[in-house]
Amino acid sequence: MDTATNETVQQQRAFDRRLFAIAAVLFPLIILFGFGRTYYLRGFFDFPPVGVWLVHLHAILMTAWVLLFIVQVRLISTRRVRLHQRLGFTAIGLAVLIVITGFFTAVRAAKFGPSAFQAPLPRLPFLLVPMTDLLMFTILFSAAIYYRKKPAEHKRFMLLTAINFLPPALARSPIESLRAFGPLWFFGLPTAIALVVLFVDRKRNGKFNRAMIAGTILMITSFVARLALMGTETWLSIAKWLTSWAA
Image 1 (cartoon, rainbow, N blue to C red):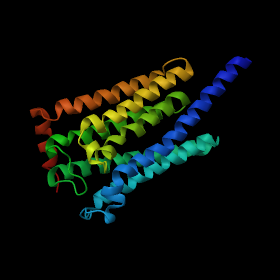
Image 2 (spheres, rainbow, N blue to C red; image 1 turned 180 degrees about the vertical axis):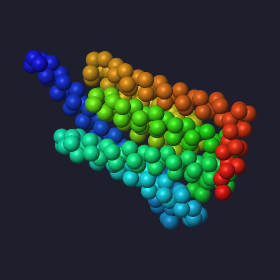
Image 3 (cartoon, one colour; image 1 turned 180 degrees about the horizontal axis):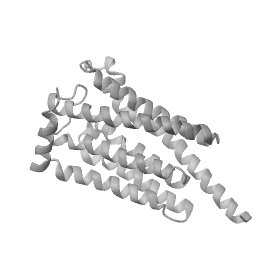
């Protein structure tokens, strides 16, 4: 590898480290921004207590995921790659538990009503939103695992996995004027973040990363699709069937 090529690679790696350092700060802050009032700090606000153990379990698992994301970014920035890889197996197990608990939490909320947050849409149509969140999480994280030996693709799929988790937090914004924008806010901001990262990545590295393009298109398409399909008879029939099993 000649000097110029090596310098380019080093610049790309430095950009990636800065990008993920920013993500490791903003990701937990946005999660706390949304869920602080309705869950983590709910004792300071006028919200009823969460009495369902399943909600607490899912919240614990999601919190663990956010913390693990921060730790993994830190390990890579300090070049502790071997430990990062070992913790990846923990992430796989945690992801499985998140999907399972998230599924049953969403179904229960659709049948009995959410204990922490009332969506501005009827419960059965809105069920498609968290279900699609879980589906996208599964796809993006699976892609990250598949490309685990290709750092550029792996990192970008992990970043998209984090961005995919932002809408639920943004929808719970304590700022009413932002919540009033509805999907334009809680889907629009993640879309804007993903597009900014995509084009900044293109500018810094001289080309588009195909993984980032594919993941961004898929995520944005999922935002549009769930809004288009949530009120259809087909989805309502599926939602009724799913909630009929909830106890």
